[in-house]
Length: 226
Image 1 (cartoon, rainbow, N blue to C red):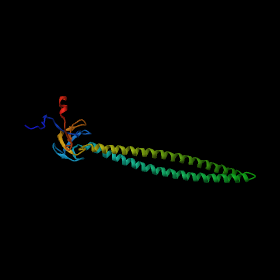
Image 2 (image 1 turned 60 degrees about the horizontal axis):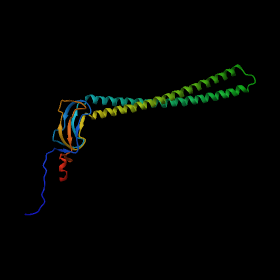
Image 3 (image 1 turned 90 degrees about the vertical axis):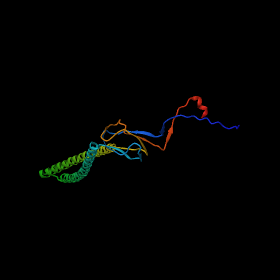
Image 4 (image 1 turned 60 degrees about the vertical axis):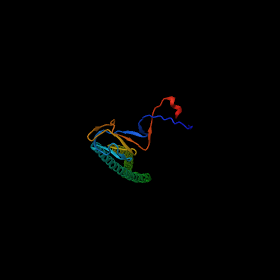
């Protein structure tokens, strides 16, 4: 007879599951064109598991790209219009300064005459009218320059909106490919070629087999055995 420890063994059954397991679903609706993985396949991060029909979203992305190019061309035209308006404003300012000098000179000459002649009076009025017209042209040129700058700001906003629309279309186009977010094993495939799928369709179940666990239930009276 020998004294030794007696081992008590508990036997149970449970399911071995992954610590990280997710169900992959399409983010856009479409028809499955091809499959890149089957159940049991080991895949790497970013691997394409399935591809959906991308005709509509592809055309939308191209249309958004064309709209962005058009917005860029319109913005370049508006920038040229701003430079032209600034040049007109400078020319109008120079014309006003010259007309103002002419009027002041005629005014001094007219004031120096002891007896004003009809010719000198007419010349003075003509120079004053020319100065007033030049001043009005300068004001109009300034308003046109301000309007061109406002249109330029609107064009810049339109271009930013077109860029956002294009980027959104490109992102939507990328959603036609169902990819693996991490390395793992395809535990389940729920779609086949030709299926019409939507955002709620379970396409694949991906499991990370490097992190496994087994959960089992036991009664409280056995707690002291652990």
